[in-house]
Length: 110
Length: 115
Image 1: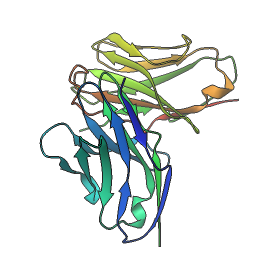
Image 2: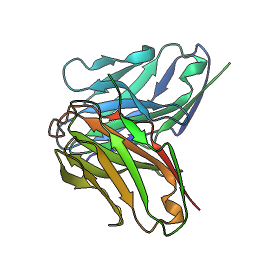
Image 3: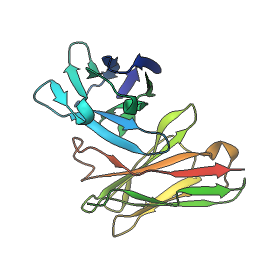
Image 4: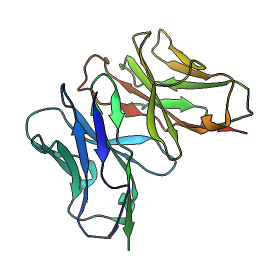
């Protein structure tokens, strides 16, 4: 069975600082990985996806993620965060169903 | 292009009643998924419909049920509501669910409150 683990439940960071949100996956079948963002009182918005090919994936809002097969990781990064990036971020893996990690709340402070 | 739409936005019911939540997928998408996001429990997979058929079901009791209509819209029904059913219910759609590389696109959810 596929599972996804987000290693940090909360990440506080100052504006314009870099950030990394960590995600590890386990899978015995195919690997399709996604990062979603959820702003307060909204649904989930797709940030980026890894399907195959280049291990560095670029998404919206300046986010990127790197697929690392040997470490079974798919960490999300942004070199300089804004106040507006404050939200909850979910890593997800797909086989028959999309399985989510428990989420990481990113708080960007001024 | 219109995204996934869900109705109603908010729903307040009392314990023991039934709730019906509705979802319209993105045009061209044939798969619809339902997730429950309860406080402290993360996103839990409920149901997956693809081309009118139920394809997979999460670990929820039978009082959670649904269906998908010929136009691919979907309905989630929750019978005999319990207080712990209070949650945000998210619907998502994708191109054929048999293509696992097709991302899910989510609606803004229905906030169900059971009193």
